[in-house]
Image 1 (cartoon, rainbow, N blue to C red):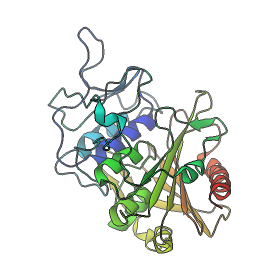
Image 2 (image 1 turned 180 degrees about the vertical axis):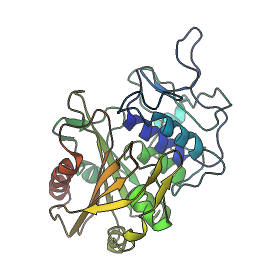
Image 3 (image 1 turned 30 degrees about the vertical axis):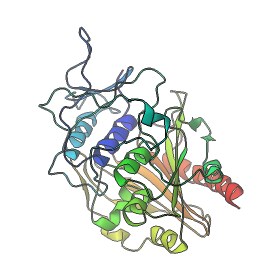
Image 4 (image 1 turned 60 degrees about the horizontal axis):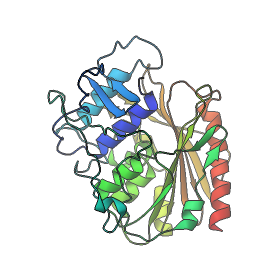
Length: 340
């Protein structure tokens, strides 16, 4: 089956995060006799993203080609990304189980489409991206993450995790990006915390001991009522939290661009107040994707919480702009109870 738009975005995040020198090859090589199209990216045994499809096929998958183009361009040597890192990410932490066994790496093929990567995984096998954090366990912060909301439950493939900094930025970008979805748009450097996420700014500017990033992703198990959202909770110095919650300069994020993804802007909208400070915004797009993401950020004296709902197909029964403050309120209550 075709991978839904959300998963295509997650793949874009992973490739953008590894967007330095491109790896040789593109998609996972199909087995002999397989009917898998040569221009498909294998994500697991049941999911492929097929490039080169007719853009007018249907409303939900109409931007698949643009996403394919964006993924390829993101890994190009000329591409510039606010979270660009080396493609040699994912090195097992010393002493971890992964350090004693070889994990399947990207399977190269079709060199005429540089930059696309995929892992061929057995059913139920976890994504080979070990936690790169150098900090010790933090069960209290892990318990602060929201594990279910309505039809959404914590992902089995990418369960909640806490990354203790310092950590290799390349590895951390991939590990966190698989749980907390970023948009494919970018603009001036100060827009990165809105387009990519506050966690990306933390990795770039505050990769120091005493800073923690907790992340998780909720997924719906009912196709009839889909809901996917990502949550991050950041703890550290108060000055860092205040900087992450500072909205000054957001007006300069009105002309965002993304390779193969068109243009967009950061568009704030009102939400009920939470914590010390809270605000929400849409990352708008073009006609085919009017909104890439709905985002709410909540600052408290103890942490900074961020909720992201990506554009997805089929659409949730409830407008994401209405769902967002509800999820944020539930996440805030959970975090306050755990961290107080």
